[in-house]
Image 1: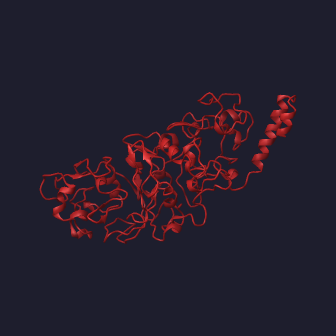
Image 2 (image 1 turned 45 degrees about the vertical axis):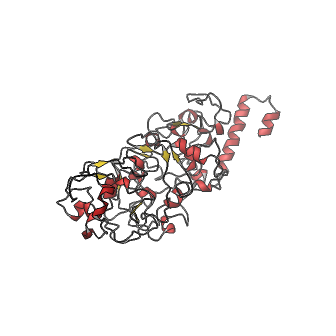
Image 3 (image 1 turned 90 degrees about the vertical axis):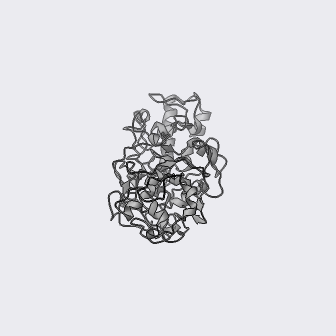
Length: 447
């Protein structure tokens, strides 16, 4: 049909338009099941449905809602920002900046070109069940800046260019998502947390990227792709306001057999080999050795004092999304606002702290609130003490953890203030001075 159009240029516009529709509909009908037709974009019931193209008769889920083979379709729609036809025949420039590109033209709750707008909730909402979270679209998630944080899309684009079949024209969102295969999570229920009966898998591993979208499948839906496949020691955190249901789907499953192997996914990039420069932080990101870190496969040094469901058993492993949002957060370093059944309460008492001179200091005030969600603080040992204070776990043998000696005071504490206690006025460095990916102190791993 295409060759006929080229040779027979005298055919009228209506004939060419009819042939084009027939050709594109053929492409849709011959797509492989399990890829585009079953994806969040390709669904005939809740897939892509751009207003200006749906009014021309294109059905929901049709390719033309994103791709315009003839560079432009008449109607009320955005023109490519560059003034030229966009890469991949997209209706808008593939990628412009952190908050501008073809994905953000639809993945926003206001001003979306998708009919009715698009709601995409945070991980704390979807997996944690914290329905009070107001973050509700991807553009908002990538718009967080200090004191919040977002994955830097420019940095991602720089990093993937030349790796794994990505090119300088690749959209950084495609580093983690195959738009022709990703499924809704949960599907078509944006204002509901995940459930065991309504699950989706939006991720595709960057290291498995293939230009043939039928070969580059979603990650997490198959055998060998679950946290329980990564380790037998995974422990799921509680869901919000519960001690009987667990992430990610609100069921009683705790071993990660219902959770995507997020460690293998994230360590495609964040590992001990790749150097990733962070424009936001002005430095290279820390190397992450999940085989040896205490939150990974490396056991705690000795005993450990934990809140449930972790208890005092050494060797429990976390998934990256147990603590971090994937896109953006109102906290620093992508920290979730809800962790292990409750929120990171910012109005609890904090130690008077100072910026440290450790190798990596981002003056992170939230990390103490994060630690408090799983680790026992002074209040857990003695209710007369303040919350988010850490005297017992660092200095008292009654916590079960080996205490640090008095000779080390100057390494962590600002001079003056007398001997420490759970309610003393002794100041200390921020938690992240000693606790960060790859950190150690006095021969002990501290993260």
